[in-house]
Length: 171
Image (tube, rainbow, N blue to C red; front, top):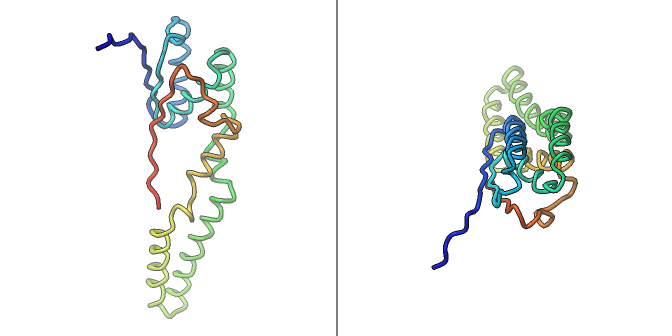
């Protein structure tokens, strides 16, 4: 059996934009200590994946990585891009339509139709929530626009190895 290699691993946890900013500070410190360039594997989840993938794509120019990620975090707002997107507004209109119809039938009659409208609305939400509210797809496009510019996993370097944990439960 071969002797295990002395590899350095780095784990970047989740927490959205806040985690991305925190991990930027962590990578800056590791760089100043001369440790970052020795890291062999970076394991990430959620907000840590933003920093980890962006670093992996720009690891050969740390100053560019650091300053550009800082600027992107400071000047780009993912939430507002998602909320004001056509996708999100269509989802809101879908909900307003059904809730408005339920209120209309409740006030103008026949009132017994209102619970049926709400039931249909809930069934449609349950069956088609990821088609009605494809928020994760919109967030993916916004992150690509802000950070990755059509880069794919194939564009990542061999070293450090980037391990991104993710889940998606949908039909």
